[in-house]
Length: 110
Image 1: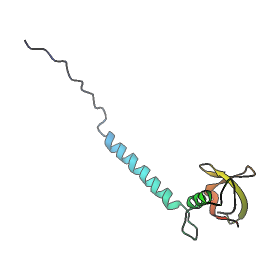
Image 2: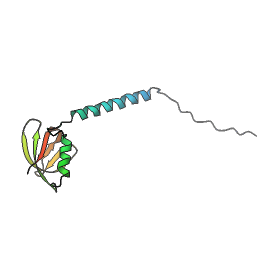
Image 3: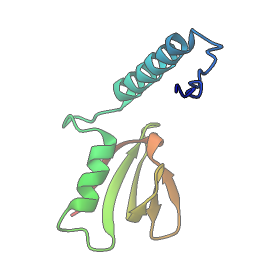
Image 4: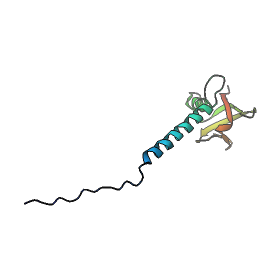
């Protein structure tokens, strides 16, 4: 007595070029990431602005605020007291937001 087995599900492949399209999207995203990395500015010490900001917040001198000198890309220098950071900006004690993309250098004030 032979039992008839159920049919195996066979999915229909509509687009055979999907892997190639995905590969192109992945490579273009990688190129954009490389461009962003090249565009990161460095100061005379060779540190990027994001690294300088991380150094300020991880310093032993930083408890809840830090007095810093901020040099902007337009050449002006500001002395501010920063208390925090969002993804794209620094927060000062006066509730001002300073865009990180406009900063070229940041240093501690003694």
